[in-house]
Length: 630
Ligand SMILES: Nc1nc2c(c(=O)[nH]1)N[C@H]1C(S)=C(S)[C@@H](COP(=O)(O)OP(=O)(O)OC[C@H]3O[C@@H](n4cnc5c(N)ncnc54)[C@H](O)[C@@H]3O)O[C@H]1N2
Ligand code: MOO
Ligand SMILES: [Mg+2]
Image 1 (cartoon, rainbow, N blue to C red):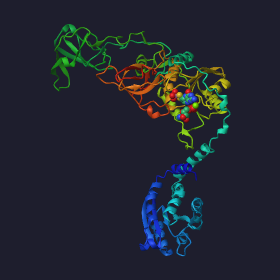
Image 2 (cartoon, rainbow, N blue to C red; image 1 turned 90 degrees about the vertical axis):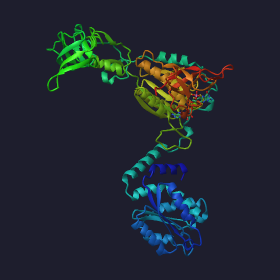
Image 3 (cartoon, rainbow, N blue to C red; image 1 turned 180 degrees about the vertical axis):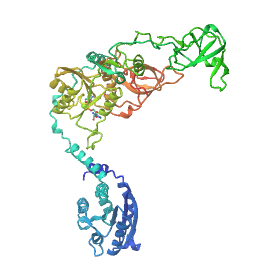
Image 4 (cartoon, protein in one colour; image 1 turned 45 degrees about the horizontal axis):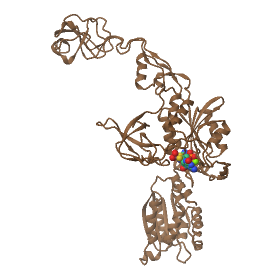
């Protein structure tokens, strides 16, 4: 069996059960102490490393049918072990009787495992053919005869190890686990076989120009081009609570004064300021939410009031409770009767007049506002529960490459798992966009056309990765041009990472589609998605300033410059004493190595290396594009 298939089956059955195992050495010489039981000891050490197993019983018996059977019966019927391995007594000498002893107690044979051992052993030595080992089942115990030699038993065990956890699951009728393993394997066999073939390719090496025909443009130029092509989408009406993250497409005015009544700013007493400091009679109290219709504050009196409650008529000031003293209460102590105002109040003190927060008729949100928590709260305050917002673009993410398998698929030789789909999808979802998975396209014209067509059916913007550089299988630009009549606006940008970043527009069923052909390297894909895709999406959904926020940062250590302007991943730290945050690189930028990007929350914009400027010193200031607030 090919090693990778074997590994796969092992991981598919992923035994959770601790397989209770007995190891029985059958040897006259070992039994008499004339030889060391190397094979038995080796199996004891080896088996728990093959799958989750516990060596529950070990024993050494002479080559004697009765003795062998006695142990096997005890281990199967009384101890109810999952697996019994015998080593020794499987050859052709007159004393070799392990298969005979085993056969008698077996209820069912399992010849496949013995055959597997035989087939594989024959590849090592023709002498394997004289081995007579048998395998089978008694009750819920799987019994395997193994050869007596250390090497032979070790090899035979290795040949059958991948099937053992699943066999034990079956013996225990663990249907859930069995089904799970079958599903896993079925999925793997239909998704991963046959191996990918290169003959699917139609492009020949000589078709491809040896120099890229696309000029190297600057990042600023590329950003200007993509933003120019991005049009603001139409509007829709949403319930205000679903509008988080959308951009408002209308002006919102307040129909009411906020607060609608003179409201107390403090917990205290509503008073007449002209009374000054001194004694007041407490004539009532106004909690928040109560309308003090029949309460009036006259000279010499006051009313207890809560923060946010309507100030009763007559009162023109509120005195906070801290600036008063209690003079007299009712007999039961429940009611305040008299207080002293300690400081003379001023007119209007601690009262919010009607409309002081928002005047009736004022514009509280202008068109183009980004609806965040405060804005949604404002909508609630003014009672606007339906709002007109710009639609968000529909996005499809497509991975391209013959070498790609899904993360849950078996990794065939020569393949890698598709990580860009996950990174790009989650980056966009994290920014509030809905993303459709357009799958993985292999690098041929037909499949790319098929997958792009599907993506264009459902999306305004397609973000693909891979297939945009100089390889003969990098045919994304040709496919877009030849099959969709796309205009390639640019195919290379002077930057690191992300040099082959490609941007195209086309008409599909009379609708404009934008295509970002991001480079396949995982770091390049994420960096370019931040720099080009996100600004475009923001513009389409109505942002007035769609580019990423850029700030000044201080380098926490020296950095070496690259020949290309570099967007270098770094982590920002804001320290109290420093007005400018410090930036620590997440490591040498290697565009294939996602580890050089983990925990980055900004991209340092580093200038290209020149003879006079090869590195930047610690403490030097550079611009940094914010990519996450963490
Ligand atoms: N002769 C030249 N070769 C290359 C150049 C060049 O200028 N001349 N540019 C290099 C640069 S820079 C980059 S970046 C890459 C970009 O390559 P492609 O966009 O054509 O992408 P692929 O060749 O398909 O893949 C490159 C690399 O990325 C891996 N990959 C692709 N997709 C995924 C995915 N979804 N998840 C994880 N990894 C992925 C792929 O296996 C390759 O290792 O070209 C250089 N070559
Ligand atoms: O520009 Mo490539 O994106 O270096 O890796
Ligand atoms: Mg390539």
